[in-house]
View 1 (cartoon, rainbow, N blue to C red):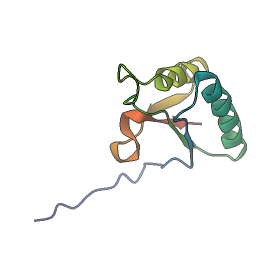
View 2: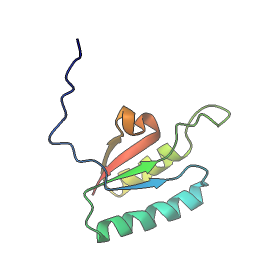
View 3: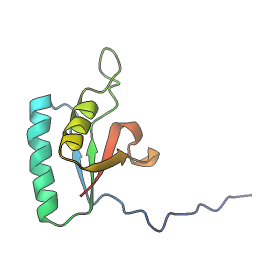
View 4: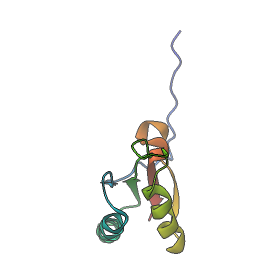
Length: 96
């Protein structure tokens, strides 16, 4: 018996995506602020930032995710981890 999947009718999927894989903190910060400005100019409501989960680091911890989250907190943006099929712990969905 197949289960019917119920979709959340209130969920708004991200309208734009920025992938920061392979960026340094400085490059990520510059790209992030540029992407944020462009997204606000276009009137987007939600964007997704892919930071990666840190699987390729020595300690398997993401370097960029806490860095970007800190910037979002300083700028008072609302954000959550992406849904599992949208990147999970390796991506952040930001409400603009």
